[in-house]
Length: 109
Image (cartoon, rainbow, N blue to C red):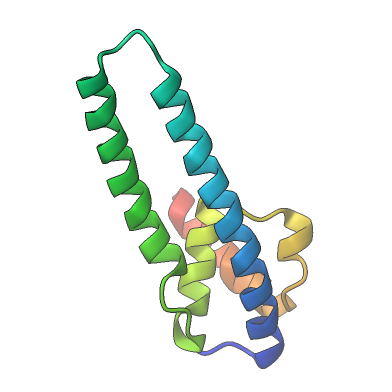
């Protein structure tokens, strides 16, 4: 589903911000795991590998290969990860916000 050019520009800018936030979240999660001393190195390594594998799937779905036709889907995945504030989301057009709210409602039902 194509989006307006003005929304595309907002998406491109906020996408980078959301990606940084997501990577920060993952690195903080990994740092906490690595610093945990109540588990052996092998168990922590295994958990690290699982975390990175799962988080990489999320990055792929939400951030890889941004195109106009994928922007709404990617934005809804970014929103599901709670990576943008309401203030930031309000930078999109009313039409885009309505679409995003409809997707939110579907996810919550």
